Length: 310
Image (tube, rainbow, N blue to C red; front, side):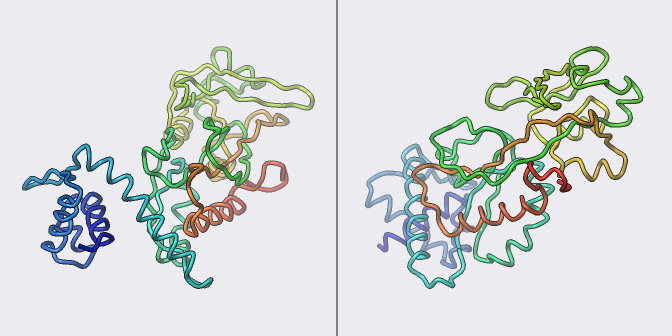
């Protein structure tokens, strides 16, 4: 038994959910893949998979073993890549998790160019605003805005998002123009609340006008934990919004959102790419990070550049 082939066959069966699909992706016969997994189980003296006519499922031992196998295969791939010529393209599977608006508005439109540049990288992208267990969820890296709650992570600051406050014309027609940010704490005004996935509470926002600094905990009638839903609620007139410029500018241009509170500056939001402290920064991860940095510079310039359009 070739142990590498056996490990690769086992991992591919788990990920594909069947021996047939795994055999197709490995360009092997189903019989060969089945024999490799059986030989691996015989060598380990452990049952790794429960097989039925409809599905393949990991046993408890198989799940624990799969986590280790994935890391071993990734390390072998990185080792091969590091010893290849300097002109070799990064390759392999990369699992990342990114915020939903960032994915929809910035990353997805740029994916064809990324694939053209790195055709051998398979990008597995989770799209969410939730907290991610990088190790438990087998994620190589996450892109997140705001302060990182886990100080043990390695992180690269990739920029800052400039934010401002906006509201839909339908909201302003119904309740009027708020005089200042603190008016959002009083009836009839309110904002759309954004729920922190870490605390479960609505996130307050900090603003500055000259030397004056305030924190606003606005009233809300709806609160959500997803960036796309947050924007949709604001466009529907459910309250004021704190938005990065890249999310707001198109809606401002077509009249769907109106900027509020001229002269007030919202505290900018730092953006990071974070990854586990024991994770080697492979060439494919470095390529992804560099790509995200490029996109940030194009679509979301640094907060200090007040003259640029975010």
